[in-house]
View 1 (cartoon, rainbow, N blue to C red):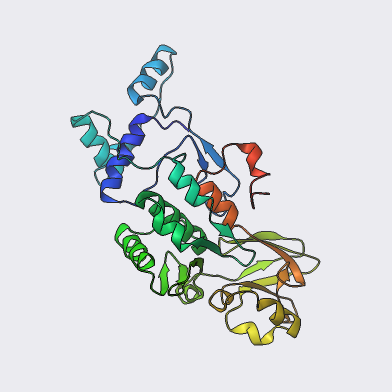
View 2: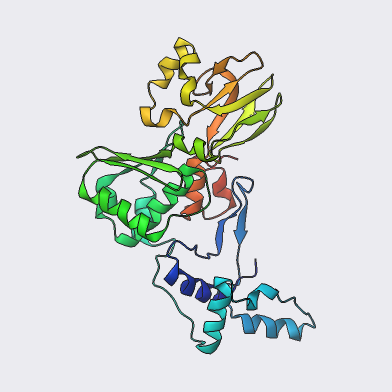
Length: 310
């Protein structure tokens, strides 16, 4: 992608009004999720100025197209570009880079589970610098919620304040549920099953051998027969005793959003490895979180980092 140093400066201005606005980096995951999972973008020109790039193109006899939206004041980036044209000095917002030691250290302490959770030590979060804590928690919320929109700055600040107090945490943000016991050290991030009432956790139909992503969180493949994939929710009573026993290892607040498969006869089963149903499921949370936090430095790591097998 041809983003330049000017794009970085514009993003810094936008973040002044929208703290959750994303950051451009030289190597990062595709913003299209879940269809773009495993796709990374390379931006080799972040150290170049836009004017220098245009001058070089002109010397090569090349032209370029101008996007009309670049001068449309309805868009935040257009307003930022206009402001920098008046005051051309490049701006940086002091945001943490992906290789900041405090951010890397905290991000690497996040663990992913097979049932679709991310967990983190409350102590580690509270002791981390504020910038690192905000970035890690924002990424955990987006990944656990299966969506793509980061939390608003004020909502994130309130959540971090509650976590730091040591009190019981039961919150919903970005479609994710955040849970921590008073005095306990473990913070859990999982899907909020209540999002089903707001259009989330939509049913997924798979033909025999078909595969897709359920709710932005799980890669799932049907085996020898077609199935419907739905959240467990109120179907727990239809599971057989063996599946209910396996489900005991999953915290109660997570169970409603766990995917189950329903075969043509209406039988409800947990997919493997959560159970022995006619489908195989794999949580994508660890993969997506690692990518979102810049823990993947190159293509070779896609196959070797935790949960990064594609």
